[in-house]
Length: 304
Image 1 (tube, rainbow, N blue to C red):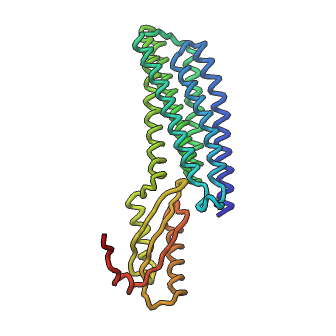
Image 2 (image 1 turned 30 degrees about the vertical axis):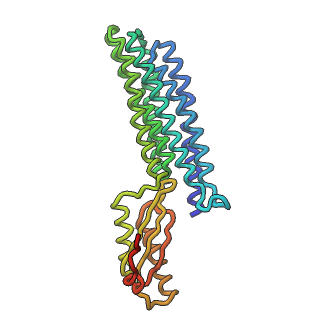
């Protein structure tokens, strides 16, 4: 297990560093293409890439700190730090989107003219190709290592690719007909909507995790059915599940025959634990309480 975690960390660092290098290259490329190609949308897109580079630094920090083992002050480890880092990524996306959107709206209102050249078109096309490749690479590693932070960063890359698509269309439209110069500003506005959507999605998932929201009912039912399928388990109750670093933390009570010995009850609990670890995807830790049937039958309801 420890070996797998170390390998996941290496993969996470590698894919994030690759993304950071490409982001650095694209900042220079899009900024120069926007300035010399006279495209406001591409310059705005370069600002988006600056936020990407900062986000990569947040991701690297989150990957490093969240994998620290439990200590005297953090009995359950540091997994929530990765969730906080992912939330930071979402906030950066939203702030960036608001900046881009307001700037584009002002240019549309003022009828600011931008007449991009073919150089801007080349810059946008290169950006799309590179960022889509980085998105696919990052999301694949994120899903394989079950890292919510890497998946959030992958969508940050995808939002940059989509924004460059909008820029490409805006620049292309202006080149076809110079009277459509306003398309460049509308492309910049469209970019902001893409980023807002992704930012809200990332924040939504992190808020659910930080508020200890339960997973999908199908996951809860799968956990219950897995436990009930073990010989000796009569019933289950008080199932509680929360998420940390994209992994499930489960607490469940199983009801067994009260005449069983402590050793026999413990063996049943270990079989349930093994079943859950094998059958339930992204399960990190499970705590199983064993209740005797006789106690469970006679337990009186609490009086408020």
